[in-house]
Image 1 (cartoon, rainbow, N blue to C red):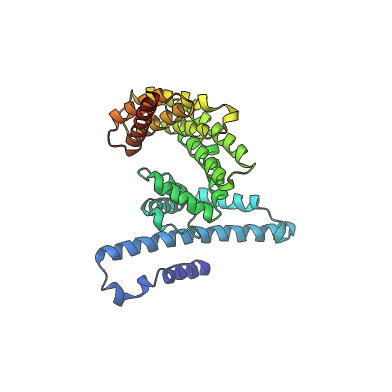
Image 2 (cartoon, rainbow, N blue to C red):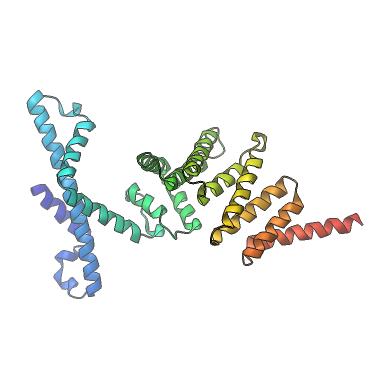
Length: 313
């Protein structure tokens, strides 16, 4: 189709004309050539799928207008969606190729390289869920999403995934995190309360599916520790941290387990039980001797305790 040819040529031009410049290509490294060709092929595949979608939409509009003389503006998204769904069901290989290309591109994209003005939300979701992505980089990306005004879009994307996979505890955890990001977005306003409740409910659903889901229980406990004191959720947060300590003792040690000792000690100290807090921090330091946060907590607690003993004499 003429539209397909136009789109493909435009894609090649947008990629810097590498496929149309043999003189420069001859000077490129073989690996660069292969990468460029792979990128072009993936882009062409996407454009073909989009072209077919447009063709299905145009065909549907034309047939509807001819048969019933319905104005174009009265044709709903449902009819267009049905036509697109039919095309996808008839071309599963094409759809799979495009999905695979997008997934691979998302896996290779660094959070620092993401252009939030153009990248699809589906790829942002994949980057944020990537194993090995540190918490600092993940939170930095969330901040970029808030700055770009796309947190609502992210929340909607996770809600859709969680609804489609209701028995996946990790998606419920992701949903809880998404609601927390929205809470951070609205700040200290009356809107924060409903988002906190929705987030807490998502973590509860995750724990109902998997009682040993560390991320669900830990994030729920941390969130509850930040609820206003008059709501009385502090003891519940402490209980969740204590359960985590029991569950952590039965599985191979992970670095994030140190945070359970740190937060539990903080909660115990805030509730007035300084000796118990110090014991918790020391227990954590025995397992994680290199954690600076636990070292500081123990040092400050011991200094405070010795100071009080000196003043009491």
